[in-house]
Length: 387
Image 1 (cartoon, rainbow, N blue to C red):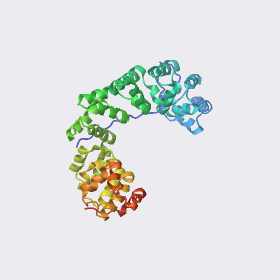
Image 2 (image 1 turned 90 degrees about the horizontal axis):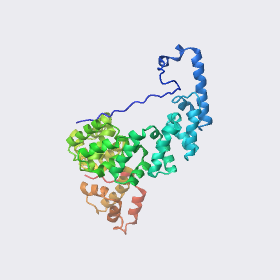
Image 3 (image 1 turned 60 degrees about the horizontal axis):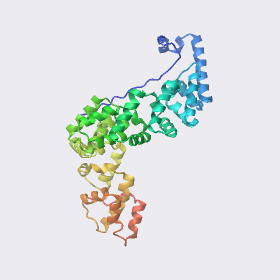
Image 4 (image 1 turned 180 degrees about the horizontal axis):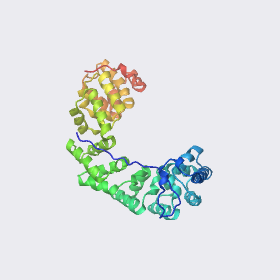
């Protein structure tokens, strides 16, 4: 089996001072404070206290939040942060939104409003985003403000617009999930197209899982090759889901899920076959996998191999789909109105709600207790074991 190692960047804590561009970093910062002279400590302590006070009094942060934020952003004078606050207020941001933005992205206080913030705001407004749209977008994903306008934001928006064939659709996508603009959309689209993935499926991937395509084209290509070797065709929608499963899990979690299925009696070959047939079975959480396997094996009495042959079952909710229907199926079986065969019962679980009600509820008008059972969601322990 091939596995994907996801590279996760480790972000250190940022500190900023008003030193000159030619000033070299002070090596003493890497040593314990006890090794430093008392005068710098006193000065730094005073500056830190001033920063905390500014964050509380001017930015609206709580004392706890201000202390946390003050460890991530330093400034000697409040001049620039004050300009940033004024800029945000003038562009329709509420005090609550401003406070949350600073908590999520403290470095915003060090931005140059005229050179850094204004051009980005103007670009989004030129596209048709309103001031309220921008306030919500940036409140949701404030680190958008650190992206380069020409290097990231503009090319990513153009790539998204080209993929979705509409500026309005691209704008709507950003409103729904602002982090969509963070990543290399153009490179991701080119890579997937190069492997024959249809635009409709690429658009689904870009819009639904924007946090998963931050990897480099080389890493994405490796994942795609794994999916191809498993036997999933790039034209199928499941191809994208397989990429999602491999990327989201990573090797450690993937192995945990494989071992979990094996603990219920699946072979490794059955796990791979089920994944190739319906990749969602590896997107499901470990908790959901355990709960559903317990339901089918211990409550329904199915062999583990029967479940392995029907991985689509892992796309449904135990509480919302299986438990309510199980009570109805138990009633039908007890009345001899449904064959005690797995394919028949599995089909009853899989069909849409409208079809299920037509088959089981409206056709049995003389059985008022049936609807009550369905609505009350009888305890699954009442379900007749099916062999």
